[in-house]
Image 1: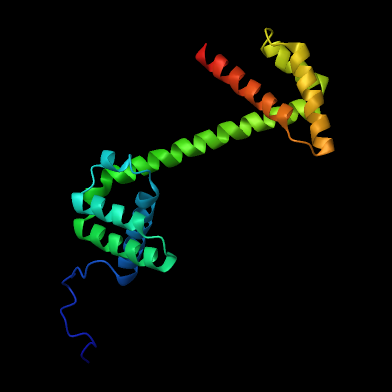
Image 2 (image 1 turned 30 degrees about the vertical axis):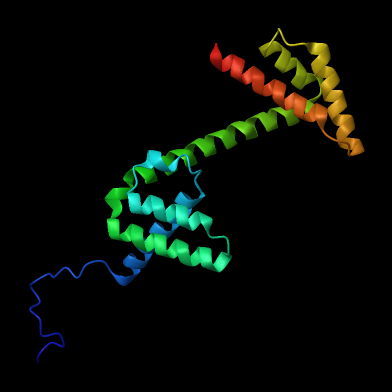
Length: 179
């Protein structure tokens, strides 16, 4: 009985990437194109992009209509696919570094916010721990800010003292990391 496929079975042919893989790659390029368009114009020259892509990014930025912008972005991605992945290695690296830096900054901000909440809810024990770590801190001023922040929260007033506590904690962390 003859097999359905009459090609030789022992030859492994490379048919190239599958349709799904091609689609994933195209969507990756489209996502990269969107990220490049969202970057500030001053950062674009530093990414070593091909000149026609830089021009196309500028044209895409000028389009304001949602559907037209989407179409222009797709065209930009098509132009980028013609250049290949090696032309965008620097851009991908720069965007990856930005994401890492943003994650680190967000984590830093969350740590400071948690420390502020600990001061507001922990009372004298939390203040005592902070004063032990930083003996040169103005105790009376910080205690006053904590009281004001609690009062502002309860009265639904603007949170000036709340923000001031955050600023002080941020300065303390910067000073301790510089030492």
